[in-house]
Length: 165
View 1: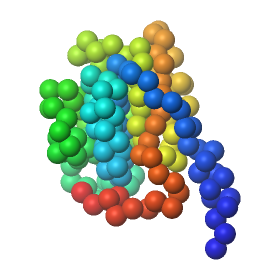
View 2 (view 1 turned 30 degrees about the horizontal axis):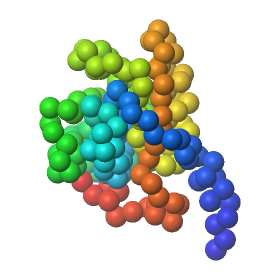
View 3 (view 1 turned 135 degrees about the horizontal axis):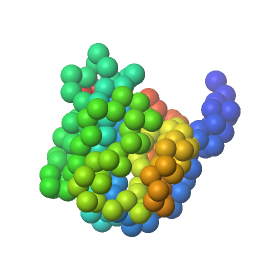
View 4 (view 1 turned 180 degrees about the horizontal axis):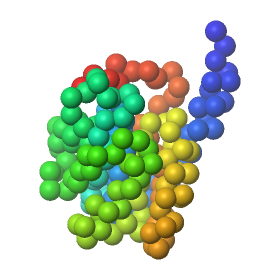
């Protein structure tokens, strides 16, 4: 089967933004633990001093996982060597819009958010960026957002790590 149009769509949805040092890396909850792995890798590469995982149970994890997505992502990051003291958790969000509302947790912990790296699945990059721009502008602070995802092509989806926690 020719999947040329699927590749065109995939390439459109992936923003391919360049990474820069930031204040915090935010791993947005989902069913794919490769998002947690990418978030932890970026932290371990020194791109930010803080890692925030956000997510309760969403459409793909409710009824499948018994723990919030943020807790599952925390386990992944700890196994990879991220110190627990550098990780914040938000365990109530059930969709992308709620995931973006992490700013409250950052403010409560006096963590600046002038520059953030948002991590989600590749096909969600454009959506995450749009939702961030829509929701964050109400906070009265200018924040530069970079969106990234596990580095893979369309042929890597789906994957055995999805829905296995």
